[in-house]
Length: 190
Image (cartoon, one colour):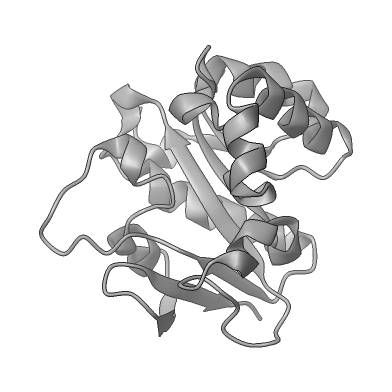
């Protein structure tokens, strides 16, 4: 299915089973269940798998809707995590991804796209949908932390924060770069 035919929905408790279907038994990438930035490193490592899954399910059950799902028909095929930056204390602990300034921002922290749909523009469409969702929740600045691989490549599980070209195509601009391969990209919303 072409990315233009995809449907995007916020992750609500009613859609939890769709996320489970998309992430599979291993929880997307090695039992992460999108908890990497929400926990300390030791908490995350101890919780890999079922514990992280339970923790993320609590986030969803709280009504937060911590991201958007992409659907091809009724099949969940992609995920983009987005929430106010303060939802991700791990970002503040990162020397490379620490806050650029004092502005309140929403952070795009993670992507997961089903294998058959990778390399087809789904990430860019997820970004557009995530920005739209954040705007509807009052966001004025959306930030992301993609990898800048230049001409290099990495396996999909290692680029879970996205790739620079997807952010650039979606209209994000570089706000800071403290590492050659990890820019902080921003979109200012009107």
